[in-house]
Image (cartoon, rainbow, N blue to C red; front, side):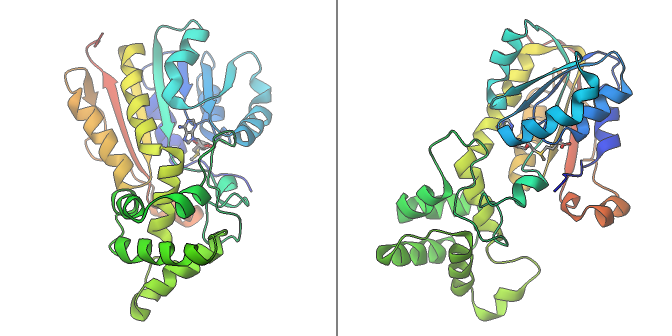
Length: 294
Ligand SMILES: C[S@@+](CC[C@H](N)C(=O)[O-])C[C@H]1O[C@@H](n2cnc3c(N)ncnc32)[C@H](O)[C@@H]1O
């Protein structure tokens, strides 16, 4: 299943608008954005990072025609400083973050979606130990409530955590479907058939917890500051309010360094949403460095 890059022209135009040539795609995924960057700027050299080795295999095949103009790293973007050090790169013209998961990950049997029966896994990095199974079956009730509240903004966090703890006493909760059905059963009948599925928020929360998504994003954004030069750009596409809040705060708390290019977030057009419904919650924010920070 091919991932359709979101806000492709908008993101790449904003990223390349400063006329530089060293770019870091921190979430290279299926390389939709990366390919467009290399096509649009013939002098560009791209460092592509992804934590998911399957994503990198796809990226490698998509980028083949640009051999010599890119390198790919299987790594957490929170370690972007180590990668740049290895590449001996001290200054970067632009960083792109296209957050979240790609379509091929959602459609895989890796537990990201409550609509696809699969073991509770949700790891982007298959080498890591923490899985959604461990969170669901081993975290305390209190910890589950906190995750569902903080990372899912789920109003029924208490009731859902209680139901999970009650159920797992008999037998571990092993699959996406078991968990999704349990969540649905906790919801009052009238609220079960709303616009969004009752399991949406809990699944989002589990994915964020398993992959430490918010911590990694904060760390990575902070680290970009060490590699920016005058006129470098940072472009971030986020998919939910928790990510977007981190991005907004980061740009605001460094407002002496950054000029905000996007006064309002750039969002997909009605046409893009029709073509690619998964783009509907995307928000793009971009800044340009007006004063070198460090
Ligand atoms: C929405 S997809 C990117 C799609 C890509 N822009 C394209 O055009 O195909 C997000 C990617 O970020 C990766 N990712 C998420 N968190 C990461 C992290 N902390 N470090 C590195 N990659 C990460 C995921 O594995 C996924 O492949």
